[in-house]
Image (cartoon, rainbow, N blue to C red):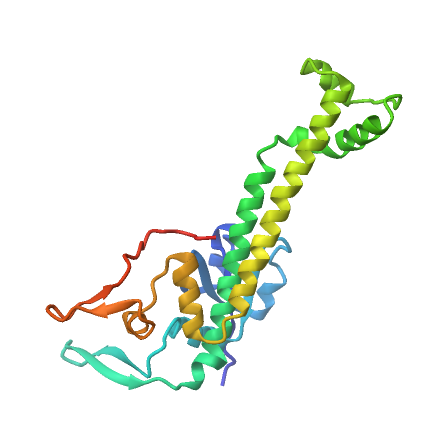
Length: 253
């Protein structure tokens, strides 16, 4: 019996070649899932982040993502073309063994991607040429502030362009560097906080709550009722939110 290929979770936009060498089997949270033969993994560039799951973990993870029920409906078509619906039981062990680790991995990868984009936005707010001189500017500025007899090669020229004294400009450089570092550190801390929240989830139910609270991805009606976030309208029988839920709320971190 042939061995099933591993499944890769990846941002297709960052590695379009995956569509050529892999077989797409799903997507979620703007990440794509592909069956991929072992020999192709070695050619993925080091800067492209991805997850690699065995076939069973990924398959159950995709099929039962967020599932908390003991029974689910499966659909088929008979020989006459009639759609059939059947209630089937869900093995309670599948969530802990396959679904939870799959969800944790995918959500973590998405969080890392979000913060990479935020870092790129911060980093790209300065031009490339200016960034190339950051280290030199800071070294000269620090040395000049400590001793104004220090001979500078760059910052006094940049100060002249801005109609500032060398000391004024040196002070601005240090202030801007501190501002950048503060924003950078805030991003790093926020990313790790979110990853810790994900890793702290002990069940699929916990992960569903996290997705609702931080990603605006609503949990199922059944779990919403179970957790007291929804109620059943006695007149209509409809399940309604106790607090209006913004399905387009985006990221809340």
